[in-house]
Image 1 (cartoon, rainbow, N blue to C red):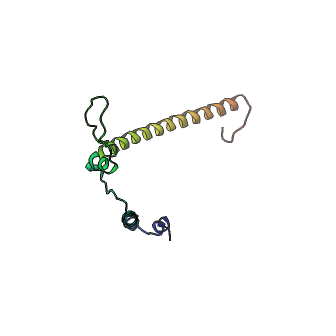
Image 2: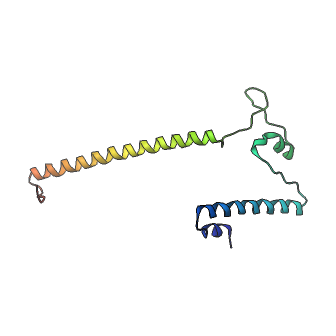
Length: 130
């Protein structure tokens, strides 16, 4: 059975999380075994380690910041503060969209009511109860 099918068969969020973690670990073990079987080195890298292990593995120098000429700092675009800011910005944008939707709906309803009243006064339409 394929991994996504196993995930879809789980009945609770905790089961989905457990299955996802198990699949992640199984995948990593398969990659390690594949590298070993092929006689290739396998880098187990954690971004918290910075550039050094990655550059050593790739046999490349650590990048230099062209503006300062110093060793570049490792990019940290997926840290919690970045995600919190993105979440905050997205929530603000969603509130703006809701407000625009409410205003547009109110204007549309008012225009419809005005148009119907105008047409009724001119004798163009007859509405029950008007």
